Length: 617
Image (cartoon, rainbow, N blue to C red; front, top):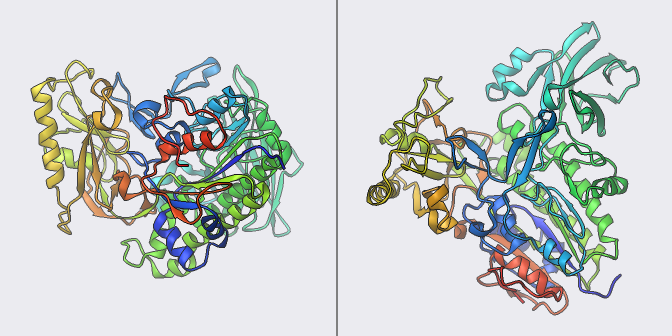
């Protein structure tokens, strides 16, 4: 072990201070308990909005969102009425493949350390795609696309696609046919970049399924029902780009009477990624040499497939934990390298499980099902205990002389009621749809008659004259009067069924994102009371039709943090231990903005004046 100071940060996305405190009191987190006894811990103030890419970029840069440029998952384009990704810009490049440029405008702690001649490894932290250059290595996190350029599109192959589509109407595009070729063989297609494709065959033989690719006869997997394949390497012939490799995994769900096969998103290969996966470029191949092929998708679990009722919970859990465990293995290998000064490894485990399993542990939740609760009611506790075990492995690996921090970007709360903010704006005459759609679908907006609409996580844009392409709300006093009017109505909004207030506070865009919001928006952001959360379908600047503006949450997304909620309502957590760290003391008034300057101070590197956070020690 090196005698130089080193810092290990375990990014426990979604770790909630109240849940951690309860499980500590119940003596169910022994490794985290020992870490707390060795050092200091407490809640960490998150960002607004409290979503992972925004919060983690504040953690890495030591500045608020107004300064680092990452504002939301989705935002409104500055010069159109279209939604756009909030993490990066995308433009068309050669061979019809996308080219990505990060919206980040601040320097990360890994880059500051690199300038000081220090070595940092940064693994899977959200909003680090495209990856920033780091002396050591950066593995891109959430935002890293799959091979077709999305956040992750899986597939459910079945010999009864019509029946599956009736069962899961929200996931029709994920459901693909298995076409009979003979009595025991079926064929399917896998989509690749730029409309390329790869075919496969599934053949029943001696009670198992034999999977082959293309016209090949050599099996890439032989599966019994419930089995997972290893990582399978695919090749796509992309017009103009040549042969492009990707990887995915398969799970045989059923071999009869209906045959069903699940496929994960097809992802970039670690050794030859289609899009920038790591900095330096060879870091992905180095990691693959350590642990074998691994999930390169920024969100390495299929929450979207579960939310759209296509993917079952057992398939989700099997895939997700395999990916998380492999990332811990990767982190342990890097921890054995004596060269590093900072090692950051982010895990989505707690966040993902709280999103999808909250109602199984909460008998008061509208989506609670006692039968499913008997099966999945302990999944959140299991996730925290799993995280505790991984913290134990990592602390042991780095030794007692290394500074260790367990950091979460936000906590988790139940979402009992779904709110359709654009539908509410429509009900008051601020928003007008431009098309008729079926009930339960989202309609595009008529911007010649729409005064205000929401994009992303609650941000409301006014259709300001001179700023928007067809803006007609005059700037100056009329603009201010409309902001005041909508704000008053938001604060007076009551859930028609329960009578409870929906909105706790309304913030101006300039309060959250600085003066630049006057030029680009958003103009208002309401913060909800705990228990309310945005319903799906309106974040792309559309309005849900045929839904109540507030309704019980019976979806598969029942726990959250995004709200939008005030930072004080969903704090993260920080646990710090190491040489000279005060023992058994609670951290007070600390925030994610303080993490980067604290790391630099512990490593003996000057804290740049550009950082607005402070060193905690």
